[in-house]
Image 1 (cartoon, rainbow, N blue to C red):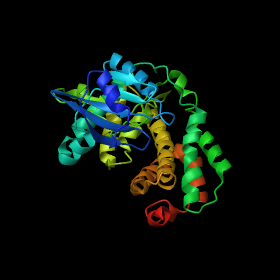
Image 2: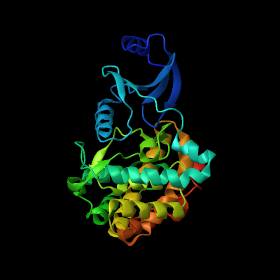
Image 3: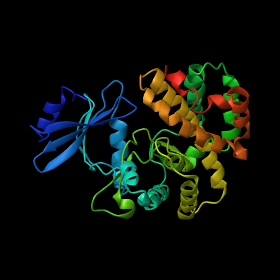
Image 4: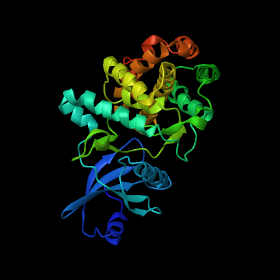
Length: 329
């Protein structure tokens, strides 16, 4: 976490000369984040190095969300050539750690996060690419591309694609009447902003990959969190709250299960890719949780063709934790 060489000159050009640059975080991409500290003020420096990263979508979406009244970081300065963006600092109070420290706040915080989604979904989708069939299939296909070979399985990839087509057909085209889908909306990407309350206290991060799609997707991302356990009881309570806030019926449950299965299949593939390609084996520790979500989603009748494919191609003992140590070797 050494700051990019161009950072001091960039900061000096925008009134932050001599500011201290402290490591803050990295993520599953090539992006890195640093805290910039000067007397009486601080900010966050995003390092999104080209050609691997392009910060322009983040800037575009942040400005859109701010214009709708949501707390996305203000853009303080940019150097697109070097992939540097200076952002408003939301502080250190992240939802994940806040709940870990005080489990009794889980319900109120999650309720605010659900209400934020319901409020966002009252607005039409912004001008971003669609969550269309190609995108759904590309993501679900990460499981057969990365996970299955890593555990030594030669599977029916064509049958896998056909099973998803059969299950998801009713959602194809949803982007035409859809909402802005942030795509990584969970406890590690939501900050609690000091001095604010309710929905307004939630600061949004990591939304640069937003697409136009179905409103159930971000709810799945929040309630079937790959990085922390969300109980089935909390999930059910928050799903019911969303349906009441958004005014949708029980048919929403089917879309929720479909997109839960699709997202969790994607995550299984992504986390194995992070291990095998990118040398980040720690992501394998999340896979038993993700598989548990996926198995629960597959139990929905709408997932019958996908469940049949899993039963025929991936034995039950290769879906959980037993293989993790061997796969990481």
